[in-house]
Amino acid sequence: MSARLIVKTDEQVELIRQSCLLVGRTLAEVKKHIRPGVSTKVLDKVAEDFIRSHGGEPAFLNYAPSNHKPFPATICASPNDVVVHGIPSENVVLKEGDIISVDVGVKMNGWYGDSAYTFTVGEVAPEVLRLLHVTKESLYKGVEQAYAGSRVGNISYAVSSHVTAHGYSVVREMVGHGLGQNLHEEPSIPNAGVKRGHGVKLLEGLVIAIEPMINMGTAKLKIDSDGWTARAADGKPSAHFEHTVVVRRGKPEILTTFEFIESLS
Image (cartoon, rainbow, N blue to C red; front, side, top):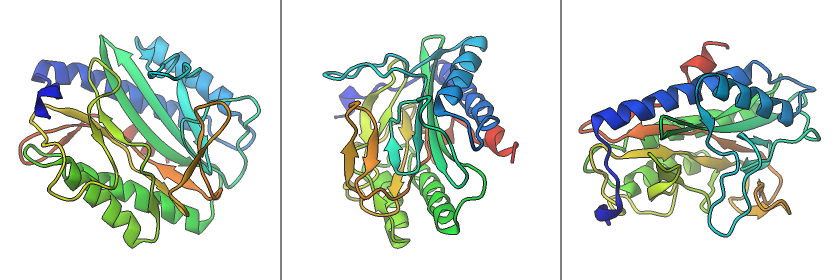
């Protein structure tokens, strides 16, 4: 299995870091525009303009996995019950009390960065804030397991055990991934379903995106007719946080950052 993994040199990691920093700055720029009455199409334009003006390319725009039509936007904008891959639209307008996951990918100097953050829109119900808090905690618990010699199952167990203890469910169809000169590389990083101590062994210099997608209700999904938008089947809220991480000995290193976002709070 390890033969399929693409380990990065320190120089390559630094190039990925630059893309990741632009992702973090882009998410912060998007946050400045998140308020009731704003469409997700406006947020998409903000992100695309910001990325291009800082020397990057939107990684998601026209991205086409095998047997899938291209994604038509710069960001995935996923409000409320949309788990991931929401397509920005003039018809999707934020309102007070909403949450929205914004997933951003950047390509710069031939290397990718990827991160996601779930934002609040105005005053949000306490039970929804709790979902966001626990989901974000689960991301860092997963990241802690991304050290050299660990296994993918340790990440899955750390995420899933934390959120299920709080009564939430883990989306299984959507997973984290390796990245580098490709947006999606081996290994896949499931947030549940791989036993602790099992799965792919993590090698020093491997770069992975860890991204818990956690639902308040059922873990089951339904896909909209656009072929992309994935919703919680019961219509209850979903949260999503993502970091790009490089596997190191002893302690992993997070390449993306939420500091730009949270400095605006």
